[in-house]
Length: 131
Image (cartoon, rainbow, N blue to C red; front, side):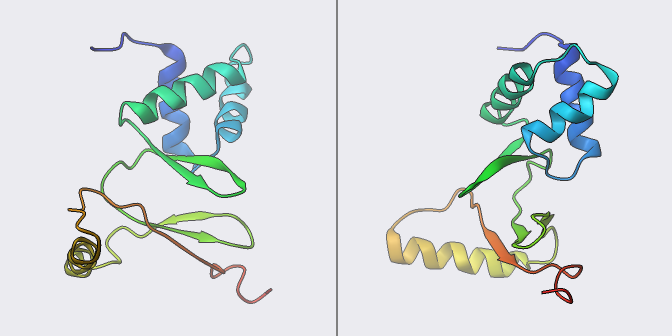
């Protein structure tokens, strides 16, 4: 089923392309500057629909609000434990290494890996000198 055009959804898409792995609240704050009539509920509902439909990735972290990513290609993330920034690992992890990891998972569990959600955590380059 094709969704009809929605100005709110377009604003959310635009915000996601401008913001780096934002929370729903950050998307809402960004849109609200130009379109104060939008509600937080509208942003949450549309982000949920977009994630369920595969238009965006929902990144869930224990004890923290979900983040959203327009990059739906197979990739991993790294999170700074100090400032909370999320980074894509695009291209920095060799495909052969990921295939090897997938094969190891299949061998140990019997699961044929179709996708993976990996998160690396530590101190980013900006926070490392401070902590």
